[in-house]
Image (tube, rainbow, N blue to C red; front, side, top):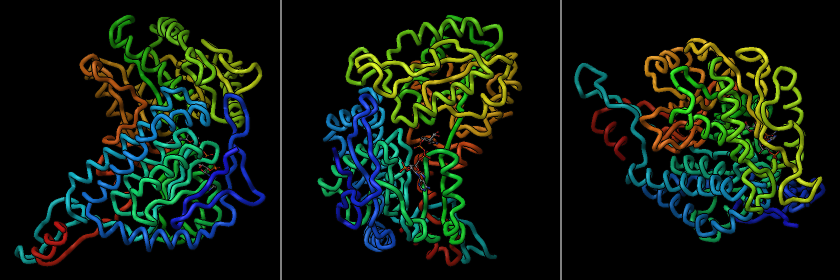
Length: 519
Ligand code: NAP
C-alpha cells in the first residue's frame, strides 16, 4: 500500500498519524494508498511559499516563467506510460480517458509555456491603451496588471488529478504566483506522481509548487488579501469555502468551478441521418460516457424537437450499444468504473430520483458487473439514458447533477426561445452545445440565453471536419460558467492570468507610465 506524501517547503511529508484516509482501486476495491496531512504546520507552509517561492518567481519575466512551464510539461511527459497505467489503476479510467487527463496536463502546461514566451521579457501585463488625463499629454494614464504578492491555493476535484492540477498551476506560475495544490484525496496518487517527476527533474525554484495530500487543515486561517483560492468541486464544498470567516474578513479572492447541468440542443433544421445529425449523436454519446460521465463538461440534458424524439432515441441506443463497461485493463472495455464507492452510491441515488420524473431509454439504472472484473466487485455503472415524462422536463432534471454516465432527453417545440428558456433552467452551465446549420436560429438562441453559459459550442456542417466535441476545455477558450457552475473563470489564454494579478491604474508622466508597463 502506498503512503502518500505532501511536498511542502522543499521536503516530502509522508502521511502519518491517526486520521489516515484509505484510497481504493475502483475496479477491484482493493486498498491502494493512505493519505493524511495531519501534523503539517500550514502557517509556515504558506509563509514559505509567499516569501521564498513568490520572490523567486516575481524576479523572472513571463518568458522565463514560460520556460519553467515547458520543463514541467516535459518532466510529466517523460513518465507518460507510467502515469497512464497509474491513472487506469487508481482512477479506473480507460487508457483513452487517462490520456485525456495526462496529455491534457502536459498540453496545457506547454500551451501556457509558449504563451509566456510570446509575452516576452517583461513583468507587467498591459491592460488597454494609455490615454491623456490632463490638459496635455504630460499627464498620462494607463492600466496594467502585476503579480499578487501571495500564494495561490488550488483545490481540485477527483476526476482530473493531472489536468486539474496543471491547468490551474500553469496560469498562476505564469502570472508570477507560487502554488500549493490540493488534489481530491481519492485520486491523489496521480497528482503526487506528476509532482514527483517535476521535483526530480528540478524544474522549479524552491517554494514555487507545493502539494497537499489529505485535508487543508487550518490553511485558510493563514491566508490574506494577496492570496488566491481557486476551487473545483461540488457546489456544497464551494459554499463552505466561500463562507470561510477568514477569507471573507481578509477579502481573499476565491474562484469557483462547480456543478453544471450542461445542455446539448438539437435545432429543428437538422434532418435525421444528415452529417450534422450523425455528429450530434456521436459527440453527445461521447460526452455522456467519456471518463464514465465524471466530467464537469459532460452533457446532462439533451433538448430535442418533439418530432425528432423517436429517431434521436433510436440513434442514441444504437450508438450506446457499442459501449462496454468494465475493467480499464480489458481491451473490450471503453467505459471504466466510477472513481469511488461514494460516487457509485451517489449516482445510484441520483438516477433513482430522476426516475420519478423520467423513464429509462437505455441502461438499467443499477450497478452492473464489469467486463474483465470479478463479479460483485468494482464501482461499475453502465451508461444510462432517460427521457423526461413532461416536455421540457420537470425542475429536477434541470437541478440535479448526477456525476456519472447519465443524461436525460427532453422534448421541446423546436423554437429558439423555448430552447433558450430550457438552457437557462440549469441556472448557469459551463458549456452548452448547439447543433444547427441555421444562423438566424442560433443567433436568436444566443441573444436570449448567452449569459447563462460560460461557453457555447456551435456545431455546424462547416466546422465538423475539425470538431473536437463540447467537452474539451481548450486552454485558449474560457472555462467556467455563471450561477450554479460557480461564477468562476479559468483558462482563456492570457485571461487566466487575471485571477493571479492585480489591476493597477498608473497616473503620471507618459514616460514613467509607459516605461513601467513595458517593463
Ligand atoms: P468535492 O467533494 O466538493 O471535493 C472537491 C475538493 O474539495 C477535494 O479536493 C476535497 O478534498 C476538497 N474539500 C472537501 N471539503 C473541503 C473543505 N471543507 N475545505 C477545503 N477543501 C475541501 O467534489 P468532488 O466529489 O471531488 O468532485 C465532483 C464535483 O466537482 C462535481 O459536482 C463536479 O461537477 C465538480 N467539478 C467541476 C468542475 C468544473 O470545472 N466546474 C470540474 C470537475 C468537477 P477531499 O477529497 O480530501 O475531501
